[in-house]
Length: 369
Image 1: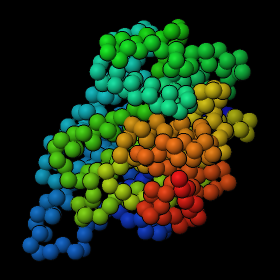
Image 2 (image 1 turned 90 degrees about the vertical axis):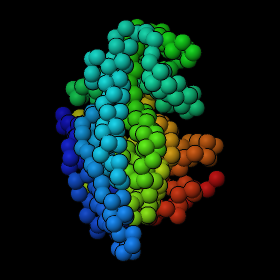
Image 3 (image 1 turned 135 degrees about the horizontal axis):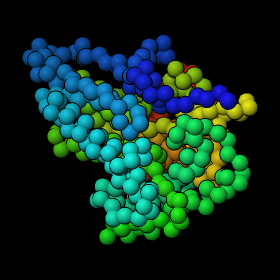
Image 4 (image 1 turned 180 degrees about the horizontal axis):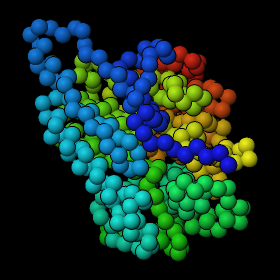
């Protein structure tokens, strides 16, 4: 068996999305955490001092949420704000990480019932709403299947059909009793477990954005293992440029998008997978079959001001496939845009971002409502 697990290192922080100072050309070098920044050359002498103070940044690189995280905050309050962001990440990691036995979600998984904290109850509420909206394709109860395939433990294996069928009995948000008022939750079937891997980083991104907003930060960039949020504009007044990784050549990018106050979150089968007997098995499991999704898509990027929504939809639209994903966007896409890469290497972009996207290697096809 050839195993290619998800690597977490400074060099591979480009897991799905990389931040560039310029959309430029493909020849632009992408290195390290993908952040290449330049200061404006059009700075007047009168504003030079104040603008320089604004453009100075405090940067942090930490490991949490089972991934490498970079935070970059500009402005006079950058040091104290950066500390608040780090504290919030650690607080939520301690609450939501299945890799920590003492976390709230781990305790729930062991007991099968609990009265949740307000934060976790809110995340359960969002997860339930998106589960219903996507007809069950986004499902936090898929964790027993992730364990079965070894994606949570890195002990990879191809399970038998019988094993998959048994675990499917534990999958489905409809098998959870949850009272929003009392915050009481219980699992109907013994052995059920939940995991926020498909929504947690997006939710945490939104919590960090709240801090940046409350502290009136003028510019910041958040990168949670490839889940990127460009807060406000860059210090020189230009838009952030986010490069989306090419699933065909993961050390390059397939497109770059200009944005402000938005998240770019990508899901793709190339992120975490293993190979057995010449067959590649990736980690995006279809909750209907219990097997890796075979939807005809290589990657899905969601662009939205709502990081929680973007995180969840990047996974569920990947499972939907091209036709249904486009249909879902046409019906529900007032607060998000999509970028799809198909198995035959077509790059499909929703009309809301058509003027903000460039690609040097692929022809862009615009999806209109």
